[in-house]
Image (cartoon, rainbow, N blue to C red; front, side, top):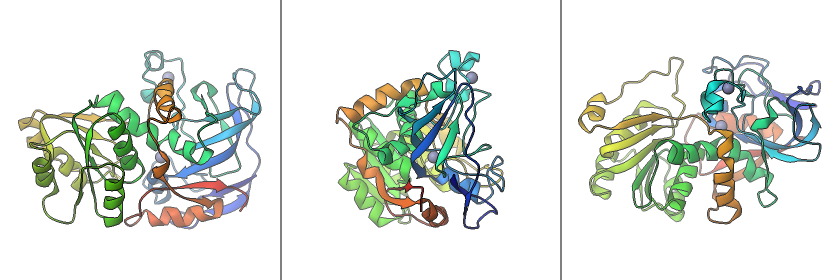
Length: 345
Ligand SMILES: [Zn+2]
Ligand SMILES: [Zn+2]
């Protein structure tokens, strides 16, 4: 099969022919229909992610068609499925309690095992997969393995966002944009922050009530003013200290900060405004992915037309276009995400 391989950090991925993947007993092999290009892939590409080594095939947000199913998998060839990026074991106490995102023996394609920047992918633990509804295109579904699900779980599974509350979103990349759209669907009032004017106007067109350029003045103070005392929930969707602190500072007392952005840097440590957390008695949540059993709650909203996630997708690219997209994460990005939908070129 054709696959894009990371041969050296920060170099173009090499498109090569590699052996087709083998099917595991509890898994499936998918013909990849689409795979999103995510900032998390960039973390691996620049060499910051401990599990991404030269020789890796990136790609963790994918959907596909089953071409082979192991004897223990309940899928059959021809089934179209969405994969959460976390493939949990399903057996351990955390999985049994429904908290599969913290499964200690989880497997994550693209991070320590071959990902979906390829024509085929072996997906073990196929019980994590969800059926791809007819009404959702593969390109849109690719985002349902990572950014959309992560935003959904951050808002509903962690911060418990309520209708009428103010939601601040710091960083309007794939996850931030998802949080805006889903937050609006939940009845929240949304303010967004970014440094790309085009993304700010895009967010306003999608229902944000205010959009602030972080390069212009004290963005947290402006959010506190715009929301009459601060946001109830704030999402950090980039992973750097400036946005993490703006998120903490823009909250009203008893507000909830959700750390969604994967912290950047080799140590991923940063200085945060702990006194604000103390004085305002804030809650600070970390979040990563979504337990697979929560898929129906999200897919139902999309297939019923309650929420339209299509503004999330900016462009589709062939496999050979992935390197340029990864490189682009070095700087500010235009609105929306890129998805690989052609694995022959
Ligand atoms: Zn991702
Ligand atoms: Zn487990």
